[in-house]
Length: 356
Length: 270
Picture 1 (cartoon, rainbow over the protein chains, first blue to last red):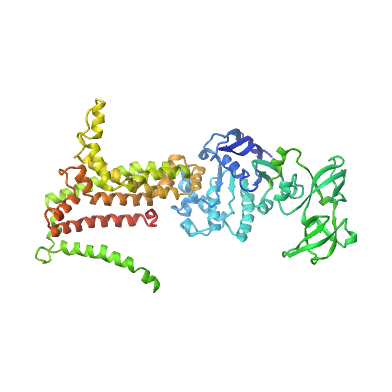
Picture 2: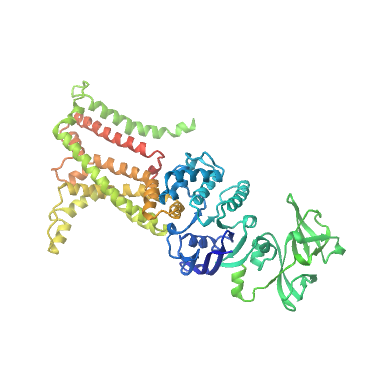
């Protein structure tokens, strides 16, 4: 698919603080791409550079084949859905939605049709004459989306649009956004710090930390094959254990040898191993590769969360089977579920990779 | 019960210093020297001397309100656009003169503007023509603008800082250039502050007599001067009160207009 946006060598600092350091990223047409990371990782700054609200110190923004680095926001063929909605409180819902179209001097009948269409699209028919203040948070967010998409942008930027909503509403809106994206065929760039939101909605996730891209990939690959400890730790719960790669397809974890599927790390090489809590299988003590004792047990609804002390490490385990505290258990891991990662080699790489 | 008790000092205050004086003004304004009811003191506004004073007062206060607005809006925008660390200092600088007595500040202008005052000394030293604005309408309006400008800046500044920067960004994002964004978003959203500022400048300017006395000599009489003279020099409390009632009506009209425009009451939060 065609590249719609290309960010080339973007660097941005505020005062002495470097927010983005030589960022390179492209977004394909019709992609749902999520910038994911903790606060201060540079994701919002990246979005603001795309929207035209910040100018990068160096580098260029290529949009649809032309350089828009210096273009003001009103000249860009993209629209933004802002955090906390940013509706025009002195205008009715219809006037809010019509704002962009009226600026572009579209005929009145066209504007009227568009308002109706947009309100239908976000399931708020008949809200034309209401004022923004009389709407709930979820409704205001829908209006903010409607206000952006009536302009038929090629690219929609969403800056933590669901951050102010409660959990249930947030989940509903996630499905709503996916539906909208499919109906409209617009490219979405979505910024969030919520990994669940990112995993649910995205085609591509870009994990960022301290101004650097940590990993780009599909939700599955980000979750199942994190490239470094930061990504593994940020996306979901995980057991990250310093280990040694004995040889291809054999790794020594906490003194015990586990079969794995990774190759090419070399012999007797120190590595980090990631094992997701749901991939740790608890067995009878004699059947496990290593043995341990259950130290904590919490019922989580779908599963039990347990901690197992084995060979000096507290293993986090999610299982539908319950093992009471004090039970002696064995631990087994399927070779496919052991993810091997290179240890950061230099201190520089360490700063890029892991921020604990 | 407890709550009612807490409001007692406040009720006493309003009664002693607002309700009773107002009642006295009404009593004096609507009676003659014998104590009989009359509308003469009110109708007295129609005499050439009084209506001229009222007209000049309205004209001067409108002019100074407009000048204040034109000066204050850009200033408030600059202040609101600054970072917190910078603007709190500048707001402080701006409020600083307000801590000094109003009379002293106006007297200072008298000294500055006098024929042989500070400004003309400097102009003379530079061999420039002297400035002759003391005892002219210009001096009075200057005094009004100087004294009341902060009351225009602060409410406008307040309403501007309340606007979410992302609302401005959203307008730009939807295709509005900076002029369109100002006209359609910033200005309408700051209107409560503007209206509040207009009231806070217009009302004191309309009723002032100190500024016109000190900077206008005794040549230019505003309605405030006329009322003051009736009380202090002529000793005619009845006429003074009658004219005060007329002036209050004008202020009341201003307040009603303000209330109509400023529905949310936002701009009043100083």
